[in-house]
Length: 440
Image (cartoon, rainbow, N blue to C red; front, side):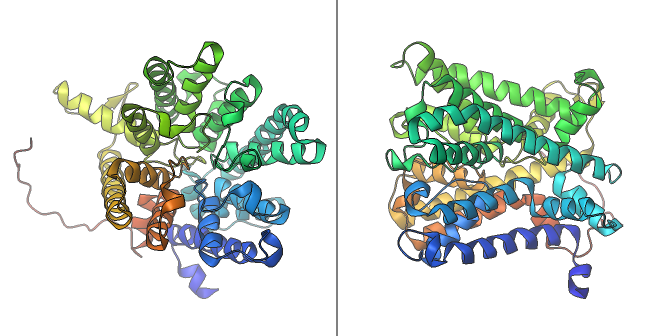
C-alpha cells in the first residue's frame, strides 16, 4: 500500500492498465472461456491487450472461438479500457460515498484529460450517464435488426456487444459466425446499423471532457473551451474530406446509398473503431494510405479513441500555419497556444512516428511481408483502431508481441509513459544559453 501511495498519477494509470490486462488474460485462459477447452496463453494475452486497449486486432475470431463467458470477459475488458481503469475505480468510490483524496483527484484528472482538478465529481457523473445513455440507445436501435437475423437471445446479445464495442471504439465484433473476419460487411448498406455504429464511434471519440464542456455551454460552440472547438472542427473535417475522397475514388463500383455508407463508414471507423463494412484488401493503395493517416490521427484526448489525437494534429497544423504567415505566436480561435502545448504535440507526433516505423519495419523483415501492409497493421495497433488486412493472423509470436507493445503504448499514451518513467516531473530550473540554428 505504501508503495502504491508513492506512485505518481501517471505510474498508477500505467500499472492499472497492465493489471487489467493480466486479469483478463487469466480469465480468458479458463477452460470454459473458449470452445477448445482452454485458450493458448499468447492468444488470451493478445485478446486481453486488444480489448483493454480498445483496439480490435485479434488472433482468433471473437464470435466463434470464445464462449459466451469468454465474450462477456472481452466485453467487460472493453468497457474497462474504454472508460479507463482509474475512472471506473473513482466512480465506485464516489458513488459508494467514500472520500476522494487529492492524490486520487490528480490521478483522475490525468486519466480523463480534465483541464483542472475542480469539478471532477461532476465530470464523473457526466461520464457515467453519457456512457450508459449512448450504449443503451445504440443497443436499442440495433436490437430489432440483429434479433431478426439471429433470434431473440443471440440478437439482443449482439446488439449490446456491438453497441459497447462501438462506443468504446474497440472494433470487436461477433459476426464471424457469418464468415470469419467479415466484421460488418453483411450490413454495408443497412441504414440502421451504419448510422448507429457511426454515431456511437463519433460520440466515444469526441471524449468525455468534450461532452461535459458542451453540456456546460448548453451546446453553444462560442462558449466552449478552445480544446472543444479544436476537437469538433478537426473531427468534422477528418470525416467529411476523407469520405468525399473515398466516395470519388475507392467505391465507384458501389451504387446509391451503399456508396455513401461505404465512404462515410470507412472515414469514421478509421478514427479509431476498427469495424469495416468493405473488403479493405480491395481498396486502392491511395485509399489504404488515407486510412493509415486517419488511424494515425485518431480521436479526442480523454476519449475512448487512440491515435496522436485530434488536438495534437490541429496544434501541428496551427504551428505550420503560423510559420507560413510569419506569425510569432501560434493562434487558434482567437487564442494563443502555449509553447508547452506545441512541444508536447511535437513530442507525441515523433514518438508515435518512430515507434510505428520501427515496429512496422521489424514485422516486415520478420514476416517477409510488404512494408505498406505492415505499416497498415502497425498504425492500426498503435492507433488502437483494429482494422486489419490479414497481417495479424499471419504474424508469428514475436511480431504479435510487437503489435501488443504498440497497442499498449497507444492506449496509455506517449506523455503518460514519459511522465511515468520520471518520479519528479518538475522542470529543471537552470537554463542554458540560447543559440539559433538554421532549419529547413
